Length: 263
Image 1 (cartoon, rainbow, N blue to C red):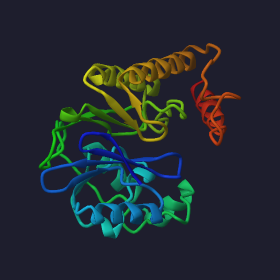
Image 2 (cartoon, helix red, strand yellow):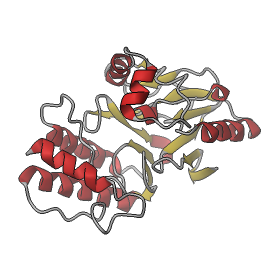
Image 3 (tube, rainbow, N blue to C red):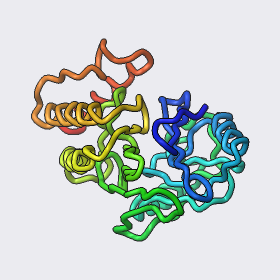
């Protein structure tokens, strides 16, 4: 089910890790950001859009992780974009075939893989998504994954944060090749902090949608987590340990793996 979060902006939540798909109304159709995960949910989203007379005219993947690279035939053949670095990373990771990626990542059987990762990289330094609708500013950084992009829907006051600013996930670092993953993430938080004043609503890739005040609170919480990790200080974070939300206890394991890799 689509839930309106701002004028001309809707969110669809998946059962898989509270993943968020975002729909933005344009003049001739909609922009679909991080389309979704499970096959029946993607089909339901396609049906909802069709029933309301909407056509998908563009897609965008915020970063090159499989759960943000999916599509469904019923969503149509609109161009699907990502940043240049995101698209290059996707091509490299899919060079051994989709089955190898699915096996390595443990992708559930309910996930449709036929259209996985078929995105076009926008030219480097592209500032906005090319489409006929509200201006969508690309805020690229290298925190969670290569070529990760947050999207600021300027006329609607909405920030699509990708896999950042979550209330259920701690910052998940790119530990595969980044020279200084913690500083990369801190730099990305500074970028998001720089646009947060223009935001009424933000949508994380996983977790709960929040308002302007909560955006700053989550930035502060993520920064405190990273500084504790960097400095070897005791961690106090409600997303880890007994205070974690039901079903998210596994995040403690993510934290432990990151701690081991960085010490």
